[in-house]
Length: 184
Ligand code: HEM
Image (cartoon, rainbow, N blue to C red):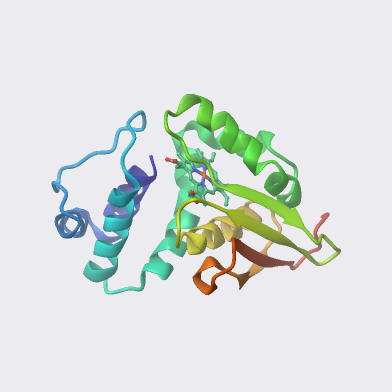
């Protein structure tokens, strides 16, 4: 599903020929499709991102951040929009139930390896978001997605990575600042 969203984003924004070059660079057939009920090794996704970074001449982190924002719209359109409505009235409530939401998705998808999120240090202006995952290097995706979620809830946020596995920490921590207050 993730790879299919990436395909849709590239085809929409850069055209089919660009997507085909990216596939070639990742050692995949240009006509490859990713059925949502099939599971693909993580290496396919990492190879696609690395190839896209070369073909589009853009840093992988920037592509992942854009992709995070795109993923929000893609999952809304792909029949998961109800999850966003049902899952909390504001960004704080939504983030607090993100693990439960992925756990529900895991029931339907085989071999799902969910990330885990925890909220701490909530005050009037912001909070800390802890991100645990078996997969390295995807924190820019989380950033793009959470910023898009904030816009969806009418709660624009700025997000700073304050701790990362890239620097040897056990997991990533983001500081979120809310323009309009956490409980609006
Ligand atoms: C309805 C919306 C959503 C759907 C359908 C969805 C579905 C998925 C799927 C299918 C995967 C791949 C897991 C695997 O193959 O093992 C995934 C991974 C992931 N999801 Fe979600 N997700 C949704 C919302 C969110 C939101 C709101 C966040 C917020 C940050 C999020 C963060 C992530 C991250 C960071 C990963 C990467 C995997 C990792 O770090 O190990 N997802 N999600």
